Length: 274
Length: 351
Image (cartoon, rainbow over all chains, first blue to last red; front, side, top):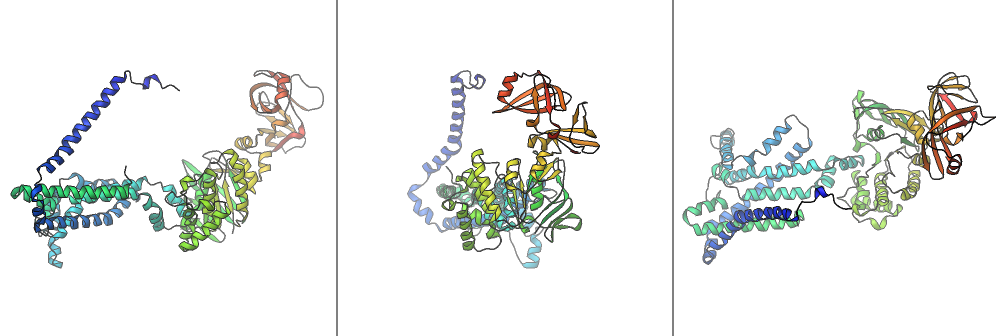
């Protein structure tokens, strides 16, 4: 059957022109925002002193700390985020819409504001922090756990919204069928629901971990930049920029490399990406 | 154990109101137009839609009685369901689908898989055990869904349009298989269908639901011979006319009079006449039949060798004649014809 004339572009060259324009804008944006900055990092990297800079104990501690903090943040995001996603997707309660908006708040608030909020809540003079100190002798601010809290604060929403939207997309008719077969809610969750959203869980975890790895503003505000305890890679890079720019460039490359490697392997394993 | 439901449940903009008892070993077919509440009935029985009033019992156990605050959730009812859209779990392979209900009841993984394999063997699907459910053909998927619901040995089996998804030529085969598998089931069985053939082959009794209300219950032949609603009449392909009876004369709303052999009792009645019992003539016939009316051809519909002629007039009927007879009479739409029906071919029963 011949296509309707109305659907056909009036002139082939015109469609070619607009497609070409879109492609050109896309390519330019990719070049300006991604390729050129990465190339700049690579070109300007002090390749002659790689060994020296990486052998520096402070830098190795920063990398190690970054991995520890971001993985803890990932674990907390999954453990706390899944129940949150479940609650928001499946349980009808008054104020659910407000709760959904609140969950995404850390994504839109500047991280430094989050850090101030955490400080006012859990810092030495904080709403909760002063009682933690007085009753249990716990001081959170400017410790590694504080860095973990700051990273979790900013990365949790990425996991929650990804998993929540996947849960809302699950076809409940299959869960009904499982119930008529005598399955408990727990069995439905573990045997059917989770396997059917595993791609989204993987994607949410990857996004959330990547966000935690790059976390800067909330960490420096709430946890400070104490070498070996709270100075993660982004903070170390920021510090190095003021003193040793060569080191800053190299550390940036290392952070970039870690992110790319982990995300690429996650993509293959979890997402079956193309 | 018998299944007994007398109650009401929310449905769309209205309610479903049903009073139904299904004996052990009995299969009841639920017929009715789309949106009549057939699927809602199954959802009430298996616990996916709670009753708003009334009571549902399985044997001695009350499954749902809102006034007594009793509600047994679906996972605690021994009721297997074959859904119209099957709902096979695509995250599990074929054998794990069939084993699902057994695992849910606490059977060990190995024992459940062994029993599931037995079921697949019975269904002739042994070699499909480790395949993805998405690779199954329509007929195979149907059998897997049946095996999955029967494997945990439920006390009650519910089937929602079990053959609707199949090609017409597969339907007869699967229908026969279904009958054989259901023969082993000792409990009540309720089957929703829109096909009277399913009801004829598979069911002991038939219930008709229309607009959320049970409009008839009984054996299929009776339902077809003596329909009580326009939908049921169409199902059986019968003419159904409401009339007022006075002795052996039945008066229609349009003024036509039909005579019957035996008086149904005075008052409002239904008149059922098979289309094949309506004879057509180009000219007024002489002699015997007492029921002779004039009519106009309003529509002609072919069914292969048989042709249905819809007639307008004081006694609006559909007549079924052979294509040859139609040609011979040279009937056209708008033509005037004479209809006759023997008094013994007219079924009249109180409305």
